[in-house]
Image 1 (tube, helix red, strand yellow):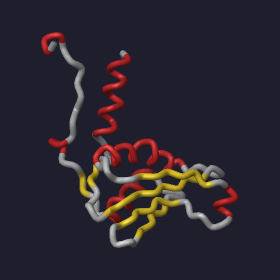
Image 2 (tube, rainbow, N blue to C red; image 1 turned 30 degrees about the vertical axis):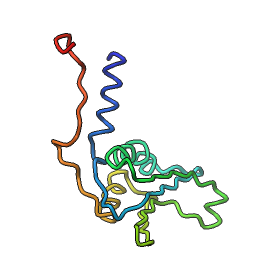
Image 3 (tube, helix red, strand yellow; image 1 turned 180 degrees about the horizontal axis):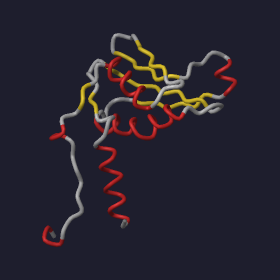
Length: 132
């Protein structure tokens, strides 16, 4: 696969996928906390695969990712995904021992997000010589 094809495939994977959701306007931020002591595969996959898709379709949504050390975890800092709302409340989605699909499903349910329609998802294609 050429370099251009790889770049197009990566960009298309960010625009299209399970994390292609739009959050309601009352969601003001997301905060994902990952453990450095025992990295959970589900949370790490959610961070690498789904979170870029959520950010792509919600460009004004502030998203923070924090790696929590063993000391911080022992002091009571939770490993989770927190959703902040404009009324000052927040909801927490458990990420420990969960798959990325389960985390995404819980995030969509807790935030009220909706899937982006297929016809609104941009798809990048390699230009042909006839297009130039």
